[in-house]
Image (cartoon, rainbow, N blue to C red):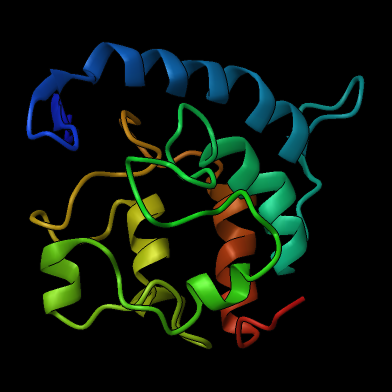
Length: 166
């Protein structure tokens, strides 16, 4: 498993986050992400993706359910400066913005590169295709990408369409 076991807080103290992250990821995978973003109608076995390839739908149905929990990417988070909770200004915080990760930013990686999902660091982080020294798969604690056929697919589709502010 590629994943952070220890995480430094603002004062430099490290804490074990593996168990906590695993519980959160389990809850997300079993609960809100699966139920809200990719539902199955009664009697159906194939999930129906309710997320659209728009920034507003991605924020509501994907980011809010898989990125904004446990103070990860919520407004005012101490873990990161990337606020995925606040709708206002979200486009400006994502598109053509240098990645926060030290190694990725040194390589000039941008969170979202319009028309190029493979070059977008955000896609790399949720798809586990980033370089091994560029942090861990998101959400933190996940052992494999989640919502591949819905959230990640719609994120890629939105970026391919030019990452409009919609």
